[in-house]
Image (tube, rainbow, N blue to C red; front, side, top):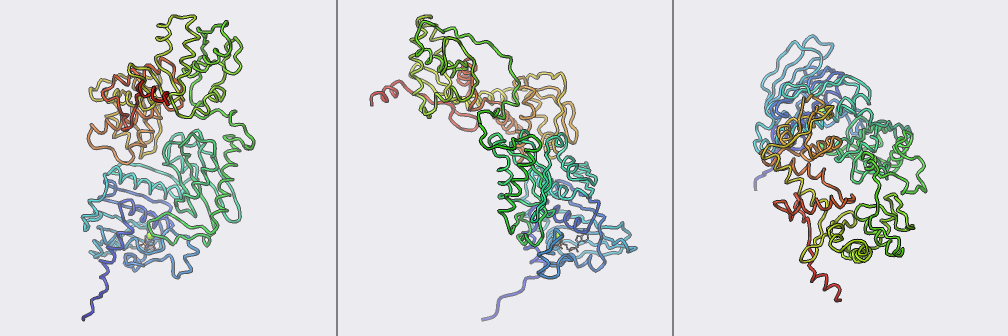
Length: 630
Ligand code: ADP
Ligand code: MG
């Protein structure tokens, strides 16, 4: 039988290799930026068009290439960065595989201009799908410029696989930010479709972080510094109160290379133990330097994972140094052993404005009934917003902190909602001596809040148990949607316009959402590259909620803005409902409970929350009877 194995022609091999190196425009951005850094440039410009789909250009003032190298750099495994396998253990460059340029040239139209400092003239090469189209001598400034056009022009399937410009732009932005953060000593500029996204002069780490994330970042940062034999840690973590909902701004750099590490992330989170609201994420920018021979970066070219020799020690050092910084800057108690958790103010209380104290008079208090029944009443009224002491009730109404005291009465009740009903019976007895039954029914028996989570209300056939959060989400969602579709949302004018700062990728999203947001009642005065000025807000939100709402929206929409305005409105309404709805764990006054129950049943679709979860259940008297019959 004849032999059938052949060596693949280079351009085919390159195209296959390209699949691994180049997944999207952002991959090209990463490779070109890293090459410019490796070439010791002090000034790097990134210019892209259509999120990089039609053009990615990187211009540097680095060392440039000789005529021979200019031709050779497009060959596979052509690199100036390592010569032998041992070099892998003392790497000081980003690249080392010599694959990137060959891969990119295989699947795009590429133009390169390069000149070394000491040379008079430079080289200008055009290459398309691995084929050299032209090579000329040219008058050029020192450095190198690569322009990559029409990415995937010869692989339509790949081209079609690209996401919307918004999504691809975000990936480019991520790569740009990673390289720019890793190298604050380099001046970076970034243009998209002709407008300047960033102009970051050479600076220190802090200025670079602030330059990229703009606005108020500076005051949120706490420096971290630790120098040990096996690792040097520098950088910043953010104060716990500025932790965000999403994991957007979390960066590790190891020897100036961006990496991802679930393990090190865990170390950071461990340092914040007890300081964060549930599920919130601190921003961090941590620069680790380790001896190059203690890490293995010889991994897949596009992956950002890394292997360390002594992970456990790094974990401990990182955790301790961050904990120390948080403590030193007074954002965390330094000595936290034996600390009574009850003494801590829950984080969310800090953000809530202090309310004017109101005097609560227990109208139903009857000094002539015995203590036992009063205690029962105290329990019931606590549940509906009042704060009457239960344990030390002695004839006077004492205000008690809303801490464990009354909640502890519920410990052991677990979730069985029906078991709280004995209060109602005892209540009736106490109050019947002062009020006639009808009034009691009106004033007290309409709704009860239990476990700061459900609202229970008697109905004809039995009772209804409403999930307060989901119900409120449904109400708000329908309100917002209605306002947006009929386009007549009321707006409250702010006395002082609000300046809200965002990163430029967030600003881009906001820019696209502006028309839809305006229909909810937001009034935007102006939008700059890093902030918006808001002079009016929807009537149903407060000034302090504005930044939360917009932050949530941006994070909900980061995977792309829906194309139709209908689904855009829908997403905005959902997002706003989610953030503004009362949360599980919030006390509700009777009035608030009433409003939620009534509001829910006035909805078009009261059965489910905007996120497709049931909003209430009913329990018929027969069902309750059955339980008692056991
Ligand atoms: P690698 O970076 O892994 O070496 P690349 O394919 O990215 O592989 O680049 C091949 C070679 O081309 C590099 O090793 C370097 O010598 C040269 N080169 C690439 N980009 C530049 C640049 N911007 N300035 C100077 N030389 C460059
Ligand atoms: Mg490279």
